[in-house]
Image 1 (spheres, helix red, strand yellow):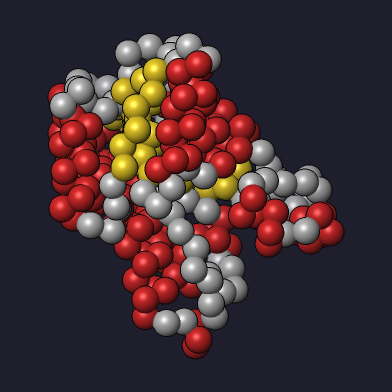
Image 2 (tube, one colour):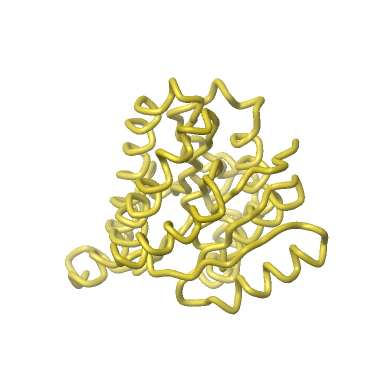
Length: 243
């Protein structure tokens, strides 16, 4: 699969999943635009390793919780040309059962995952549509589909992202742009490893292991490719059979 010449923005590229998708798209020829906010050093290191391997990468640091920062960040990105592949991967957890959840926990999680999707996708969409070819991939979660105790905020944000995926796909389908969501289950990462021990994974996941970031990246690359041009408006689970 070749993404030669395709500018690909991955939000939240400082985490394990974002990094794996960036590496995959770069390996397939895309110019990857790496976004981060709180950990700019992580995407700088990632960009250096992608460049060392012969790929093309740029770093873009801005806060998805700010209308102004996102507008300025997207304007800088568009100076280099339209983004044709957009991966809305950024998201945060701030878990608590709802009776004990603070308002700031609710608002932070919604603001990054859902409002961040709007703040980045909206300004990039018209330039993408003018090229008559585009892919929007929204990274959702099994929590949005099955629910998860202690994650009402996260499930709400990702569930709204699933609905937004379906609605947006209808608006842009005639312009050669597809919009899909990927809903991962338990994916091996430092964050997941701290929460799920092997015994719990064995109990929860029929295939008896966590998924890998590279497996999610392979699905993202397929959905972004020309062979997936007839797939749009879908929420595709990758969870080892959990649901």
